Length: 228
Image 1 (cartoon, rainbow, N blue to C red):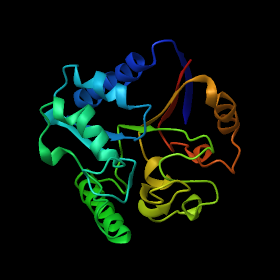
Image 2 (cartoon, helix red, strand yellow):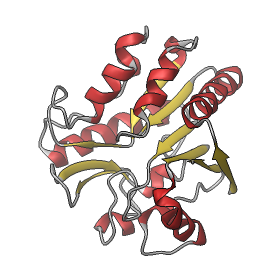
Image 3 (cartoon, one colour):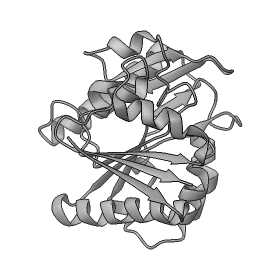
Image 4 (tube, rainbow, N blue to C red):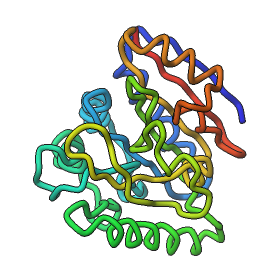
């Protein structure tokens, strides 16, 4: 695993540039760019900036790192946030967006998403779906995706997608697990603002109690983009 830490004075532009460059490299090398998006307030302006850039969206496949168990039109839905910030402004084929169906029963939705990713992975000869770029956020408690401190997901080694419970409403979530996260070619944490500097330091030092410290791409790169 190769790790780099970038201290950014232009966080939104730098984040969009990482995505844009990763897309062009993946498409040039493999004909497709597989991108996993994260939720929350931090990436929202990044997605809006990305929507203003010229990319071959028909060659980009989008997944989600986690989702709240709500319908896609609910204000708590990660999908709704991304749709308004990005999808509504670009011409991307509907089939290129793999939405986690948060309105379903959590275990059923998890299995459905896991099987969908496994089906695509099998077409590429992969044991696990390998994202070209997987974006993650960092919570104040060190959580990432919807893997929280003390969660059974910390010890998950078999499943790629599972139900999870968070400390804030809505508590029921669906999340990718570390096996599929760490199968990515490139993982990038998007962390804006100085308020999480101490937590970032703890994660980078490898505190095992912090879920984000378990992100270690097996044969890929790890980037921390830190806004001031």
